[in-house]
Amino acid sequence: MSRINYLTRIEFGEGEIARLPEFLAGLGVTRPLIATDQGLVASGLVARVTGLIGDGAVVFDQTPANPTEGAVIAAKQRYDDGGCDGIVGLGGGSSLDLAKAVRLLTGHEGPLEQYAAVEGGVGRIHGAICPLVAVPTTSGTGSEVGRAAVIVTAGGRKLGIISDFMFPSLALCDPELTYGLPPGLTAATGMDAVAHCLETYMAPAFNPPAEAIALHGLSCGLGAIRAAVADGADRDARRDMMTAALEGALAFQKGLGAVHALSHPLGAIREPILHHGTLNAVLLPAVLRFNRDAIGPKWGELVRRLGGPPDEVIAALNAEIGIPSGLREMGVTEAMMAAVSHAALEDHCHLTNPRRASQADYLQILRDAA
Image (tube, rainbow, N blue to C red; front, side, top):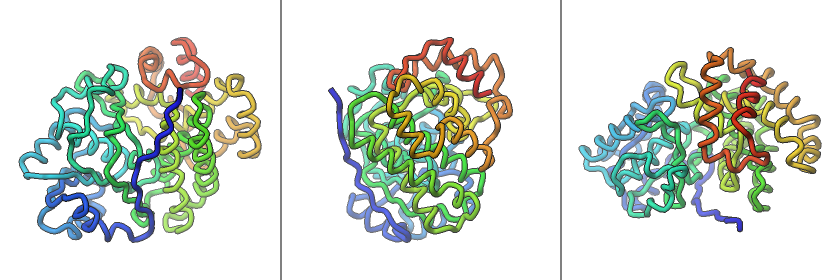
């Protein structure tokens, strides 16, 4: 059996952020919590958004790079203290995932770990939660159209909380909000979107619409990422990168795989703080090689679309756009790899990789990506 389910309402286009008050009114939200980070406060974007909303906006700007349960609880307290009745997630995947988790707590008691997919939490989640408008300011995770929030729990595990009730009420996708994004962040988030498209395409579940969407997103991402990195104001490139991000996430209901099974526990490491998209980019060539014999004719299709062996093309692209050369350059040690290789077996993405990996396989992938 395969579930094929597309439920997200998306408002897409340059300048659409100006319609945020209209969308909030349509959802009955009069006092939203803006879940964001300090970088967007410094950029002036938070002030722009609160200016659109007016006096009703309440801001939480302490989202960490890998959102934690502690930050979620602090944001929920801000929501309660401010008398909020809805949430606007504003930022990259971290802010959007934090916003989703805060929304969950508007109708559920903690702790968050009980709602994780690997803990049987899907059936514990219901729809009696507040409205959420997701406004991405990077083009990577696609969290604005996804049904998951990935959170570092109080116990130190980075877990996916997944449910159809977790879809944002509305995804407000305005490519203008990504103009001027620094080259390094453009590259890292863009490769996150590319990884989503590739992993979804390789995943074994039967979902032809997801595969078609993933391949279109892959074409958009690979066709635009160099231009987006080179010129932060390239209108067409920014639009296509935002398209790749949302399509990767629309498609990954089909499942992801070993890249994410490894990048999730790597992202739970407290020091160094590791960027999710960068991890996915670095891991992707090794995982492509690991999966080659398991995906059959899909390998040939990827060769045709990428113009060469997928692992080699992605490795060359990583180098061209400034992605680190390997995990060791990012500060990952052998001891960390050993621990992550065990944790990957418990990640929800482990089960949807086309080739089942053992702990030893995961450790070898990490070493190959080092």
